[in-house]
Amino acid sequence: MINYTERIALLMQDIVARTPALSFINLAEVLVFGRFGRADADGAFATCHCLTLPESEPGYYFWRDRHTGELTRRSEWFITKTPIVRIGCTRIKYLISFVLPRFCDQSLTRSWKKELYPDAEPWFAKLDTIVHELYHIDPDASGIRRIARADGSHSPRSHGPLFYEQVASMVRGYLDSSPDAGMYDFLATDFDGLHRRFRGVVATTFRNFPSFPPAVKIEPMKPLTQPALYTEDDLHIREFTDGSARRLTRKGQHRAA
Image (cartoon, one colour):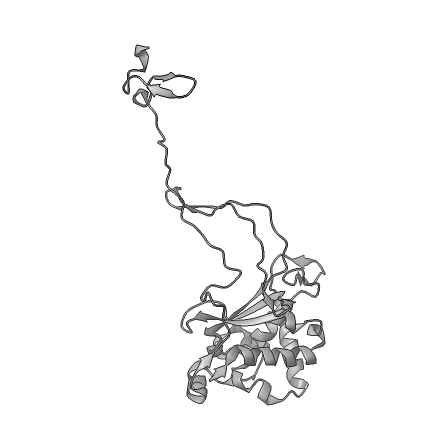
């Protein structure tokens, strides 16, 4: 069987070694893993997750029904804190996840990226995605790379036209460096083809699959345990002593005292 994430990790090593703009990346601090995602569903093909962000102030989130305004669920008080992931003695700074089998079936023929690669083979879309995720890694390891606008200012978004063009330039530069085709030839085969050729596809995942470290647990809001309306029927008389308080009257008789 083919270990798909292992092959991607090996390809990343070759890309980083041949691409000056990515040469700062220490791939020993980057973990590649697989997530599940159907090929016929919408969604990302891959994602770069940063594990170097500082803790936040305590937060408390509510969700409301958009039609009634009723609070429907909440999270507990929490502090956003990136998890610690270690491989041996090395602390991982970035996780890059690939959505399988969706990533395997990615093609330029069904992507707007075709404009960036005229006359390229369909599998170029996968190589573009791999370089794309590597380019998200910030040189200072302080988060996801900030995107510069044409005027030199920074965009609040993690993508932009210039970002895509720079990724395409790196993809072309990598292929122009004459790498061994054996490093990337597996990208030319879709998921069904990989199964026929290798009799199975495996990938590194986290033991608590389908979850992985950056996931956030959402807990349902607990119902109120105290009434929202009180009347005279909720009042009564108690005799207080130095050791206890004893009820004397029934509900509604508080005026008798």
